[in-house]
Length: 153
Image 1: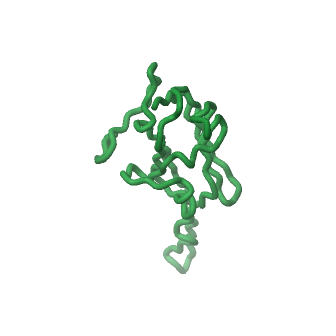
Image 2: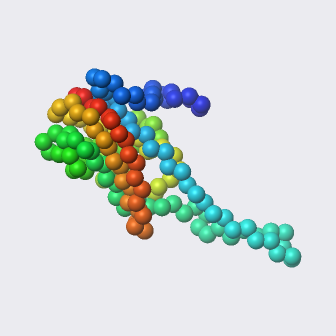
Image 3: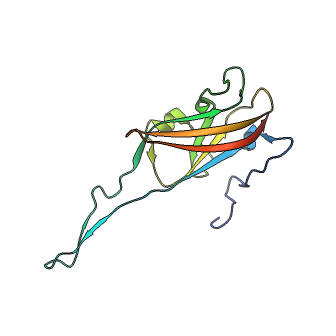
């Protein structure tokens, strides 16, 4: 529903640190990507106007994405290990997500939401500081930091 934090499948609320934490399957990390586009407008005396825009839309391509925590998620995913193998990604708030490696195989960084969710619970309740890093094919990196996320099973 436009203008609200309600969707057909989720109720989106801003996370506030809670003493008991939040269940792994109730966490969704919402990242909104914005695009900056440049179009060249040229006016000449014998034309009304001419526009140069090649290609019309040029999306950056994601080479990789990593998601790390300052805490152990479980024995197989200690602090600092990439968590993308145990998370799903959705464009917008779609009900069906895909695993991140599959998503990355054809990922154009378009404007809009990327919604990340955990697939299974951690072995213990811990407070995680999560870092999400985008790596583009041209070498640029962008980071998002999510502090103080207390995750319970």
